[in-house]
Amino acid sequence: MNQQSERSVRPRRSFIFSPGLRPDMFPKALACGTDIVCVELEDGIAPKDKAEARTKGLGLFAEPQADDGVERIVRINCLREAFGLADVQAVLATDTPPPALMLPKVKSPDEIVWLDDLLTERGHPTRLHVIIETNAGLEAVHDIARASSRIDALFFGGVDMAAELRCKNAWEPLLYARSRIVHAAASVGIDAIDVPYLDLEDLPGMEQEASLARDLGFSGKGSIHPKQIPILNGVFTPDEAQVAHARRILQAFADADTGLVVVDGKLIEKPVLREMNRIVAIAERVSA
Image (cartoon, rainbow, N blue to C red; front, side, top):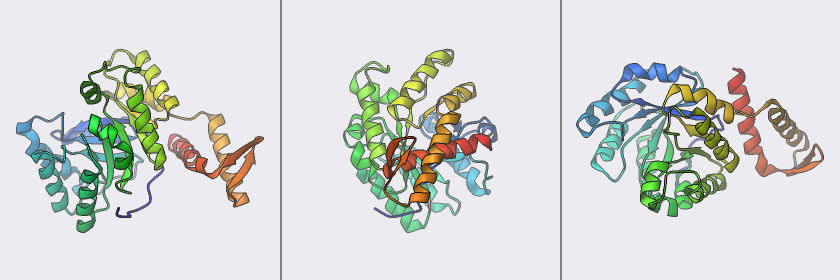
């Protein structure tokens, strides 16, 4: 596993796709309030338009990007398909690679190691976000999560996963799959992001599912429309009491320089520090 830059602790409460074919929509997506904008080259692009979307989507990064707190990702095609190989070749060919790539339909850690090696050879610092949406990927998710230090998050692809598992695309039937992804992400200290809620008119239902995902351990949830984003950000934003508690814990460890401290009468150990840093990072993003 190649050691790249430290994994970033940053808010990943919400994300939205922006079509690679429509570069004019990218600034609108960046301004909609989401934490992550993902330029789409995969499912949202017809085969006949893949080459054009690739050129236009990757071309967005030819110019320096604003430091606006929004994470930028490009979802390429599956690495086991010709379109995905063409996407990788284009990324390797450019001197201005996207900050991160989202990898769909990942089935094994070998795919991640292969891409990591190519990016390292090329000298690209590009980060990786991995979608777990296949039965094979779910089976290997712990090894996948450990395959590269470039990985910042695991995304749950619930629609494809339900089809593979032959189960209903609903909370209860997919609870095991979600839990396994959260477990794998937590084991290496990366984020887990839940699948978008597809009923655009059922905002209360989306809010309920987002709350369940948050309580299970997810860091955020995808959206299919900007009107979903304020609700998602609200669900995954810690309240003032949580932020104050996190700051007290971080300060206590900074003062004590030890492996455990007592805060508000409770024993706290160092493994909680990443979550406390994430809470503070979200609070600082919101206040900014």
